[in-house]
Length: 517
Image (cartoon, rainbow, N blue to C red; front, side):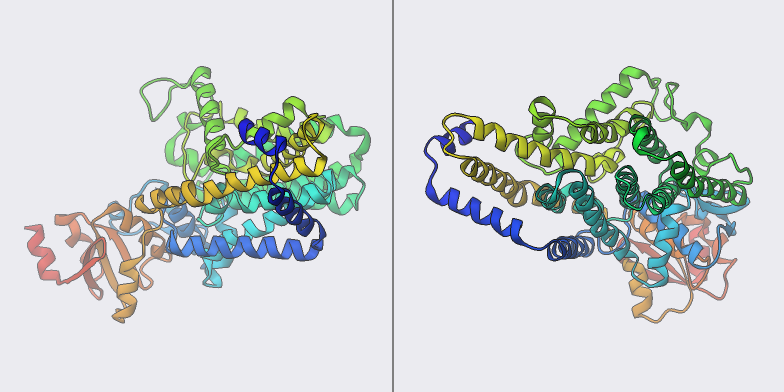
C-alpha cells in the first residue's frame, strides 16, 4: 500500500485523478433519500440472492433450524409443545425434551421470525433487517460526522462480506445488530436533544428487544452505553433515562415470564436448563474441553476474534481494521469516537469470560460491533487522506483523495473477485443451507400424512422445524433402524418413508417389522 501510494502521489496518472474526482462528486451530489433507497434496496437484493443461491432460502445451521422450530411453535400460538411419543426419535442439540418440547433460545428472534413464518417469507426477515441496519449506520454517521462520512459508512457496510453473509442466514445476530444500532442512534439523539423523550423510549424499547434476542451481547453493550451516559451526563436528563428504562425493564420481566412458562422457573434460562450451570460465563472448567477456561484462554479468544474481524469484515488482502488503527494512532479523537471504541471493546472483552469461541460466517460473537468498526474505518479513511494531503510531494488534497479512492477500489475488487467467491464456495460445501428435499418430495407427490425416518444428520436438521406443530401434516424423525417400528405403531394412519439425503423411499409397516427382527 505504501509503495502504491508513493507511486500514485509522486507522478499520478491523470486518469486516476479524473476517475476518483468523478466518483467522489457523484456520491457527494446524490440526494440523501435516493442514496439511502439505493443502498438499502441493494443490500436487500444482494442478501436475498445469497439466501436463495447459497443457503437455499432455508435455515441450515444448528441455531438457525432451532430458531425456525421455535418460530413455527409461536406461529401456532404455542410457547412449547407436548413431548412427542418416543422422544428419543426427536432428541437433538439445542432442543429441550422434558415435560415440554421447546428450544434453549430466548424468545426474541423466534418472535420476529414468526412474522416471516406467518407471511410464508421467513427467508426475507434477516435481509430486511440488514437493509434497515444500513439506514441506521448512515443516520448515526450523519449525526456524528456529517453527510460525506455517512455515505462512505453506508457504502462500506454494503461492501462488507461479513455483514452480507450474516444478513442472509437465519441467526439472531442480524436482529440484535439492528436493534443495538437503533438503540445507539436513539442515544445519540437523546444527547443532541433531538426529540429526547421519544428517543429515550425508542432506545429502551430497542435495547429490550435486543435483550430478548441475545441477552449476553446486549448486557455488554448496555455496559458501554451506561459508561457513555455517565461521561455525557450533563447533556442527558435523568427523567429521560428513567423513561427509557421502562421498556427495557418490561422486556426483562417478559423474559422472566417466558422462562417461567417454559423451564418452570423465572430465573432458569433455557440454555442453562439444557446444559447446566457449568455453561455459564466465567473462569471455570470448560464443559466441552478437558482444560479449564482461564483468563489466558479468554485473551486467546479475544485475539482470535480480532484476527477474524480483520479477515472477514471486508476480506481485503490487507487487514480490514487497517484504517481503524490508523485513525486511533494519528486521528484527532472526540468523545463519540471513544464511545465507538467502547462499543467495539465491550463485546471483545465480554467474550473473554465466555468459554466457547466459534467462527460461523466470520467471528459471529463480535458481529454486533460492525457499525462501530465501519464508522471508525470511515474516519480512518478521512484521516489517511489528510495525512497524504499534508505530505509535501502531494500536489493537492484532491489528488490525495483520488489516490485513496483508487487504493480502496483495488482492495474491494481483490476481495470481490478472489476472496469472497472462495469464502462463498467454502460455505456452500459445509451445507449451511441444505435443500429441504424431503419436504418438497412429499408436496410434489401429494402425500397427506407422512412419517419420515431421516438417516443423515444435515437433512434431519433442516427438516426438524417442520415438526412444529407436531404431526401436522408430517413427522420427521431420526432414523433408529430396528427401533423405527416403535414410532410407526403410534401413527398407523401415516405413510412411512426412509430418507437419506435426497433419496426418499416409501416402506410398509411389514418392512419396518422385518428391520426390527
